[in-house]
Image 1: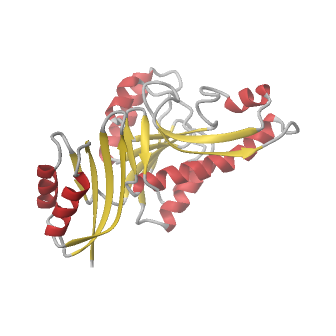
Image 2: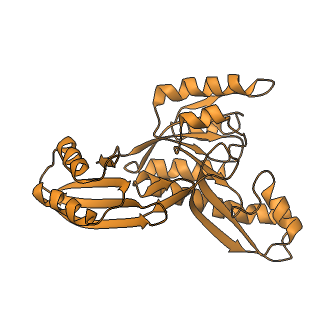
Image 3: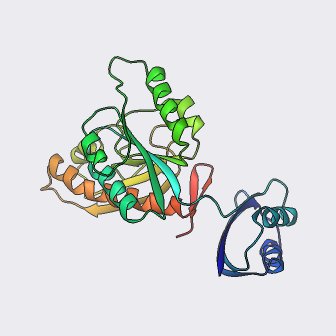
Length: 279
């Protein structure tokens, strides 16, 4: 039994579900799961269908669906899997460690093509998983030169996504534009609270009773991109900044892992500065 995944994004109209089902049936496919959402404020329709049945002609199915949908519809049939990712790091190991372990034990979901670090601290750790590590120093170097060197490496691997696993650098607008909606960042706060640098210090000084982490797509606006997933944990007045950091690292790993999982299974659609997530 073959499986077929269909992703649809288009303007909303009456009868879309019926038209989609008609095309799927004509291809001798059965709809095992269909998740849909309509953004009424913008009259946009989003759908994710898991189908089974006879082996389908992907290009033909895509064309047939597109004919039945409003103009400008974006239809994807059987997107690439596993997703190739490149991981950008600085010195902290906890998020990278989670990604490399998952890459080792769950190769059907993701393939870590390479790791790029602006320090060498995580090289030996990465080498232990037989993943290529590239050190590109940004010390005393213009940002455009640093990013050009990164781009040259990334072009060799053609990753589907870049994951900033505690990569403590701000990327230029030009670099982000090259990978629009393809750069995933983990920020150590429950955004929009405490954006920018030193969020745990900010949270400590504010006396919060919850801390959290946010995985989001990177845009030209710092820590303001479409949010993929978030999580919080309770703390209290006894926590020092260091204790908050330690507790927060567990949340960061969980949230980034979840975001990568959702994206790798094509369960995330971007809609302006928001996401539609079909969990």
